[in-house]
Image 1: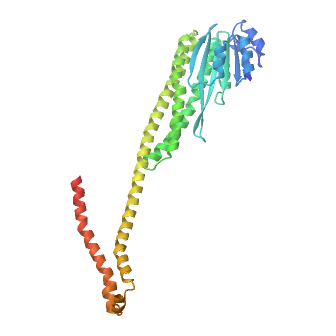
Image 2: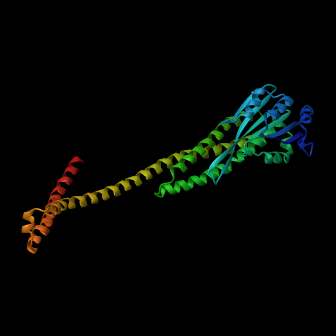
Length: 338
């Protein structure tokens, strides 16, 4: 879909509205340059643009595919293809939404093909139209405006990632464990963002060397400075998330050890209880048998106290003495092992 098509000459836009495609191609030889903006065009529309402006078929094929890294390619007729990755941060989903802008740059025209929602260029065109001294430098000024817009849009992404990383970091280093899935997700987002930012440094350097208009060089270097800052920040965020992930795993390990200690204490208490009841169960089971001798001799209260209560107390006393004797031996063996 064609968003806008304009002919720029002598630092100003010649028409108020969009220029038809065929007329725009005809004006390419009349001085100035034509800026054609497309958003997610279909194959037929791209084929029409290719035939109208004489674009290389491989360059058009590159514009149709989604790339993971920015790049710059030189084709015939001094036409360069510059591919940029755009980004926008979704705070609710904690995800970086990526888009792509393919820029066909020639001395007489600029064609932008945008893919994805995070690739708006209306602000770049409007700002450039308000700078006639830069617009008069030719088609390279449009490329600068696009680069400036893309790099400026990186700053909110860095801020969004930084905010979520601070939350996770505060949670982990307060001693509480953060959801590991959230840390992994943020690290993946930071890594993908780094892949969009870091290769663009080489692309901007190449563009600066190829730009013949001297008035654009300071502005391109300014874009490069901003891009360097973003690159350093996102690299630091990626490394920080790796450290936070390791710290979170350590916190989870400590929590699991605490659970294991509590479980061991519970098992120890149950073991002691079972040990106490084991002789008692034997005694009560023995005296619960219907042997004649037991029935004839356990017929009074004194016999009940001696055989019944005494039969329960004596095993408990013996068990207590046995546990006290074994406890020092166990501690001595543990010390010898260390």
